[in-house]
Length: 148
Image (tube, rainbow, N blue to C red; front, side, top):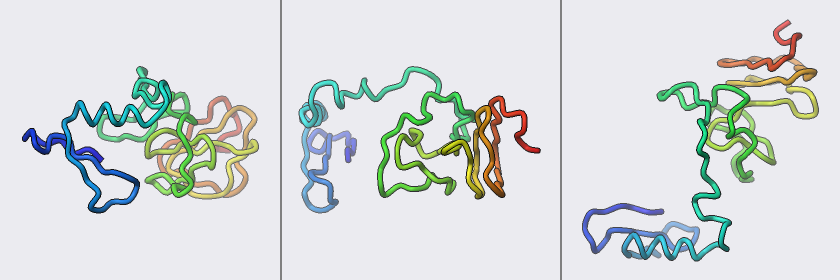
């Protein structure tokens, strides 16, 4: 955790370890950046390797849901075992979730299972495997049977 303060004594506050508590330390922002960069091998967490320079394809500046199934954020995230749903309650896959708090539900094994989802996308030849309710956006992506 990094807290920005204007006074030089507490300019960069950092948390040591993975458990919140009294193990805080205070240092300058350049020193904290140098320490953080030393935690990972070169090229594995250098900020640039995790950056995107393309539009994430969000619905709007006020609605940060992914707008369609062409977003570069789809399937580009790292799975976190304790995070099984996005902020709308849509399920997150065990591998390769979308980056960010929104997940576009996509077919697994060629089919979207029964359920209520905020947004979903189907590719050509993929099917709906039961009663599916999509409350916001459905993207058929070439599936001419979608919605019938």
